[in-house]
Amino acid sequence: MPLSKQIWFRVGGLSGALSVGAAAYGAHGFQTDDEALQKSYDNGKSLHMIHSAMIAIAPITRRPHLVGTLFTAGTGIFSGSCYAKALTGEGKYGQFAPIGGTTLILAWLALVL
Image 1: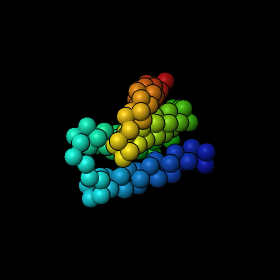
Image 2: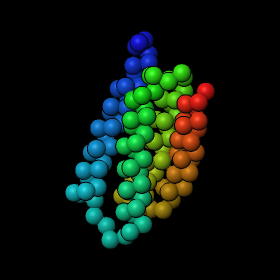
Image 3: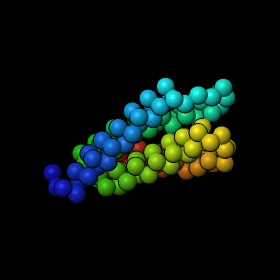
């Protein structure tokens, strides 16, 4: 496999490690009585984990750079906005989640190309 495709294994591995760290922080460090903020954090964490695996398998797809880029961008934007909203309590960060979600939908569709 060309070295250029292998980058997605590394990006996926790094993202997966970060998602486990986020899960650990969510379970042991993040404390809020606001159910909406907890749900935001949990949504970000769940999609972060799932899509980290998808980033890691990008090299075996027909269009690895397109798939890897879309999954990485979508995960970063979606989960990042969920984490930012939950950790700061600022709802303004939530406005970016639909952009990340749309990017993730495009990433899944890129698998059929």
